[in-house]
Picture (cartoon, helix red, strand yellow):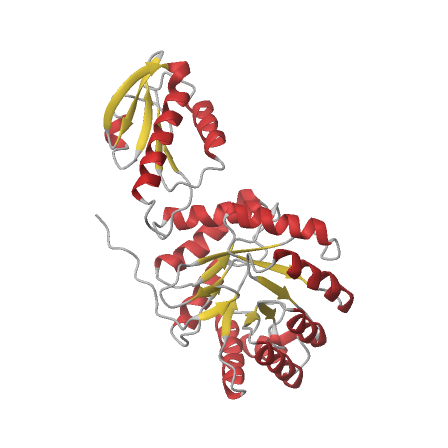
Amino acid sequence: MYEPIKRRKTRVVRIGKLSIGGDNPIAVQSMTTTKTEDVDATVQQIFKLKDAGCEIVRVAVPTRRHIDPLREIIRQVDGQIPIVADVHFDYKIALMAADAGVDKIRINPGNIGGKERVREVIRAAKANGIPIRIGVNAGSLERELIDRYGGVTADALVESAVRWINFFIDEGFEDIVVSVKSAIVPQMIEAYTKLSKLTDFPLHLGVTEAGPPKTGIIKSAIGIGSLLYQGIGDTFRVSLTADPVEEVKAAWEILKALEIRSRGPNIIACPTCGRTKVDLMHLVEKVEKALENETLPIKVAVMGCEVNGPGEARMADVGIASGLKSGVVFRKGKPIKRVREEELVDALLEEIRRIKDEYEKDNSGTE
């Protein structure tokens, strides 16, 4: 057995209909990659992200002419998922986005044009009853801090974040979320760890510019995952150079790996060895493909050896273990039927459907 992760206690911030911080679930975020002015494409992508398990979506608002499309996007999404306006450089865009009805504004105060302009953004957020994410990263770090620390360092990122937190508090605005992202994983871990000891505002985690999926998922799993394991973080985004749906899938895999939240199957599979008498990689691919849209939180094992398979994967809810030309289907480590090799996947899916029916029946009276 293991001790469940004990989360750091933070304040609660409401973003649309969703609350983060406190005892609320750690929320998965992503960002649209469509052109914001293409309203139809952007709305379609937002709903694809929502269907994949995204809980907060950020939309780029690069110029003032994007406010009208943003307003229409918000109208069509109709509160089904919180919309965050991503604003850089021009503070008036943030003011207009707040009035357009976004659920949150994300700014990097260091590149928005000075304290008076940040103050105007605070006023607009306060007037519209929406929170602000204070973003700090290498691109927005104050020159004075870069010079003093000899470059972009974790301590410099933390000092900048604390300065802006205090500025917002002095302005009477505490409806904030904070991030200190870095593309350097150890630096990102150090910055968030230090900041978590200095503030109780919710933290948004991320390895910025993590790159393509092959490397970006690894960086994010190490950086975000190690912080979540320490109980640090209230919401996060896996930033990939890819379809943002892939970001959401990776985010849920991180949560499932840490046993923090469950959504969809958690597939367990052995790495194969000399005992394997089946094309296990092909078998796993077939199972993954068949379950890619399944939302039932279930552990599924695909094992290449029926000698040790059920025992090694006894933590799984259901699984298959293949032998020579046949295999067994098992639940909680106990074999329940033997089938031919070509029937293994169908037999597994049939058992999963049975488990899903049982699950839905047991939970039919709950909300």
